[in-house]
Length: 269
Image (cartoon, helix red, strand yellow):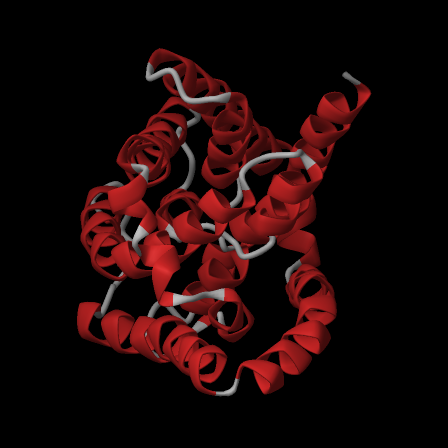
């Protein structure tokens, strides 16, 4: 999140006024469409409440900062991608608690094992781990641009390996549970990814976005901040249950596989 802030300028938030259609279509796909698809998949596959909450958590998180790199590789609209990532990070500060409160209540009713969501702690952690690092990054970029560029060059190389390391640590910790449930959870997250990619492509064409905007919308809808989902699931102040993080671990893997295939298809064309 800090690395994302170092890339941002205040003008990036103004893009919503300059190109509202592209911004609104992509945000609707990410913030409304994705949780609806995730909720439908959880119910269709009758997932256990803990795993269902984990999948809903992924769907509620903002776009990952790696989406900017994927947009560049796919010859998409990088400026749009940066703005979408910034805006979704702010908007989900409010939407994530609302959707997760509903999801927790809904899926808890299906089990004797209570799943408690302390909304206040969730808001505080999101402000601390999301909003504050972004704000500090934007401030450094604005006041000390040269320093921000140097720091960003280092962090840019570390962000993706750090996510993979985080996922690997949880994979090792919960190996037996992942091994037992990988087929069903892998199917669910992959189906969620492919469904959202196809739906994002459909609504992009419906609203006549240009080719670069369509590619970026597809990537932004498909690429969520898995690290944040893992942080919320495992946080001792929120869920404090590594099992809820398992869907995010599998998602982190499948997200990159599916979107790299998408980028590969575009490059081949």
